[in-house]
Length: 340
Image 1 (spheres, rainbow, N blue to C red):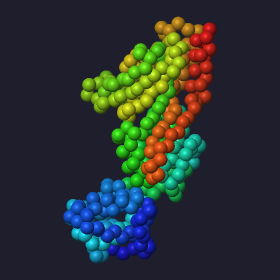
Image 2 (image 1 turned 45 degrees about the vertical axis):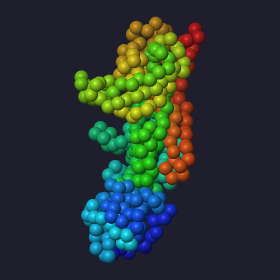
Image 3 (image 1 turned 120 degrees about the horizontal axis):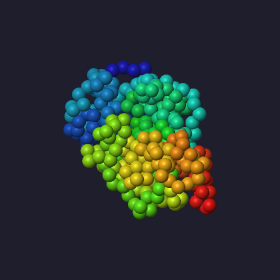
Image 4 (image 1 turned 30 degrees about the horizontal axis):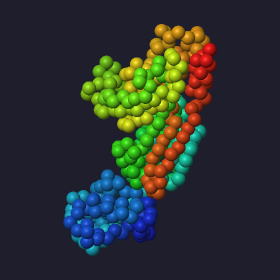
């Protein structure tokens, strides 16, 4: 295989476009080719995932003595010198769109966003553009090294369209793998605050109930025996009698988890169009307040804190976000009513 790009040493670099020389050491003798290349890349801090390596092999981008090596299961031999060509990442299918996003932190590996309510994370039917992904493609133009060979942001976790708050996004394969691993082992911590109907009993506890598709409405999620394990820790921060401000920490990451779990314990999130409708009818309160609560335009749920280990430096990173103005205004009305 030939290339006009310069030969590079992987040490200390991400796998930028170019040709990289990899020599098999004795301790990798007899290992599968894909595993050996991944091990060499990982040992030298190159952002190449195993799936990415396998894709490069399948497309003839790894060569030995000038001949392509496509068999990922082939056993390598000590001393063999492989040439790995890493092409520029392909252009992502979603279009880059200039949009106003609140960037809390950014470096060459990750970007932390304070997402506004109403912003969809991923393009999907009904929301083909003007999503967070579209905005990040524009914002990060030229700084995405490619997730799986495609120049796209690595979405590790999501927030619902009408949930606001903090999200962390990867800018390269290595960061994506590291954050995904932290998400899986629950070391990536997320804390939310929600205004809910009523006051949970006990005032601090956990909801350990599996979540899956609702058997009654496939567009919704529900606590069901056929669902996946889901665990939410909560504590009441403010008791307003007919409503409360609650802090929730996710131990798992199921779709609509907090919304479903709070509804499951009979304390649905105020403003939730799917799981919290009609809760103001039986409550004894001022008519104006009842209207403000029942007509709150979205679920009163905000991701206030995110905690993770930086994939490159290994340092702990914690970011916080204040409640947005609409939820702050709702809380002030509740506090005023509680004092009267």
